Image 1: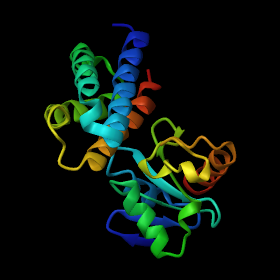
Image 2 (image 1 turned 45 degrees about the vertical axis):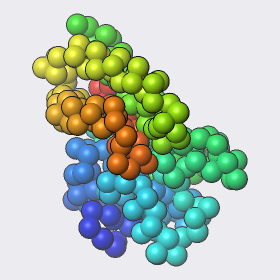
Image 3 (image 1 turned 135 degrees about the horizontal axis):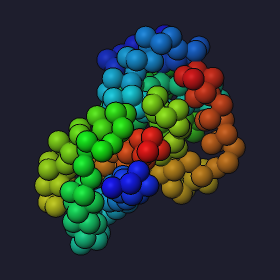
Image 4 (image 1 turned 120 degrees about the horizontal axis):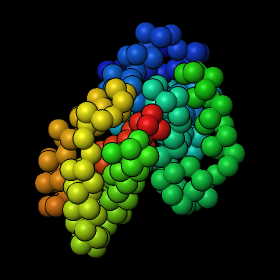
Length: 114
Length: 104
């Protein structure tokens, strides 16, 4: 694990303590950015762009990074983030519309956080 | 108020926050009149929710939202200092309230 401020870089399943730390910012809701190629994520920050930057600094490629959220209370995942707006990659919305990316996002978040 | 009505109100607030966030991020000046319209609608929704009627997981978050709402309202009515950052705050509230509405 790598920790900068509130951001955790998650490469293996989090511990309950790490999950609690990540969900402090938003009372149980965690904003995450997932690298769908490296199958890792960054979470716990106030803003997706900070998590995105942490992953870029860690060697991720921009095109592989997608943002959303995970709610510990409801166990729901969402796919909404300012960083997702990429018409050039076929995603003209702040929601992840690309079915395969959503599927990978789901798998990775569940594997690492649930 | 029934749980169904409360859930619907939370979703109405959440969707409006997301909607306004997108408009503010894309074009505040051009969408301002629409933002103000939905802002007033959101205020009316917020006033109708009694936090005491919400389950614990939704109540805590909703109380926090209500405490921040006056500042959000003021900033949305005037030019936000940083539209992208402000839009993200609104959209985050949209996501959180959407999730917590499912507790009802």
